[in-house]
Image (cartoon, rainbow, N blue to C red; front, side, top):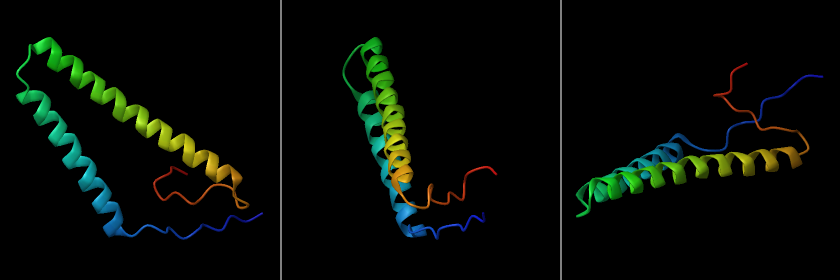
Length: 84
């Protein structure tokens, strides 16, 4: 059985916009926590909470993508960043 890679549908501009949007959001949140008029332990708690939210968001996105890929007739979509 031969595997035919599926053509990637996202453009480089879309990928760049997503990365830029994520970077701006993280930088703005970090700056807001840093400039917050509160004790250091409060700022540290908020920073840890943001990091936990980000990592759980990535995990949720991966789980949803894997579930969608499992329902496709061809199986997983070609991932150019996946190690062979």
